[in-house]
Image (tube, rainbow, N blue to C red):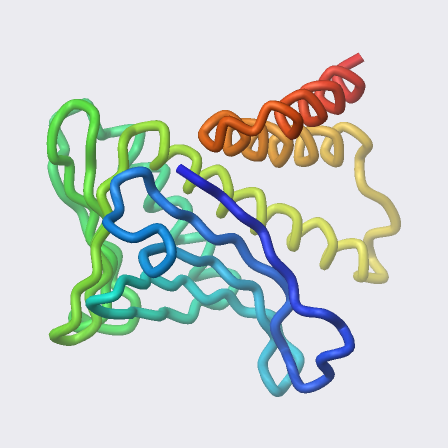
Length: 201
């Protein structure tokens, strides 16, 4: 799976968008039009929220999560991953009502389907086991990073443990390392590997 991060310039004053990740699974018909997104944004009250998007040439679904709901979604993904090869075939995460949900379905020993449902509109992607895990780790890395940074802004918390910073940074580096392998980007792989070795010393 190809994973790309992107940001919007601060010069774009009208934008409440902060940054996001774009996921392009291996099994898509068109790598330019078919992808999943997770985007961190701010609303008119300057409160952060997350957009989870599923886009194909045949349709587009977009869901908005506040922090607690986003964490619940990550937990849902993690729980399904842990039970994938223990007989669990399908589970769903309801967003607002039964018309808005994300459905996970086990297809075989190595593949699963993630479907976004919004009314009559359904957009789905096929993921292998490793792609599903990368998706979960990426969402969790974004959540944890924002949790840490927002905690630092609090007057009650003046510091963050060095080991927590190191662990979060390493998780992000490993996600990027896997992406460089998928894309056969040797230069990027070598650069990230050196940074991982430096941090782990």
